[in-house]
Image (tube, rainbow, N blue to C red; front, side, top):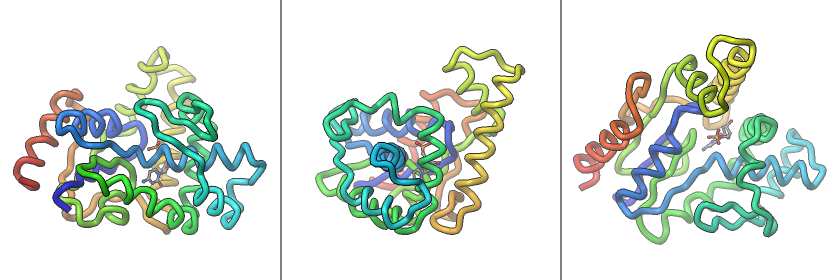
Length: 218
Ligand code: DC
């Protein structure tokens, strides 16, 4: 698929920022697939459905009343952009994302984003399951320590204290859950370019992806 760039990687790696910037540079649409799992977790909580009830959560995922309106994410008409970014919903997303029926329910919805032109999609299985024919696949990562430090900075938390340790532990737990699950685990594909941003800023990462794009998709 000449019109799709798939960017996968662990949580807090900065792949969302990079993917959105690449999409803007190319004038393409952007899919934050993690938001769909977060929305599913939030919708389940709102409907009183437990995150482990596979059939019921999958049904909710199929009927997800979501509208992406520019930067805004509306669930049942309510702006939930901030709510889905919470730690609790992140954990819920990780739980519902491990359920095969839920992943299946969200598959077509994700593919539909590429029907009307170019798409940059980020997540865990963009290159492996959702868009295996993408013309460019990138595995964007950074060490857990660096990702924790970036998140701590965003939250105004000093490096090294108990709060920082909690953030690091959370990132490591999420990595383990996303990597070790049996359905669509996070992994670097043999045909994906590796982009480690431990010592790299956003600008440089965006330029690297665009450079690969020009070579692989032109
Ligand atoms: O990228 P994120 O942190 O917003 O993702 C939230 C959770 O959803 C994360 O624990 C993994 C899961 N996820 C997934 O399994 N597959 C995707 N394509 C995107 C996210």
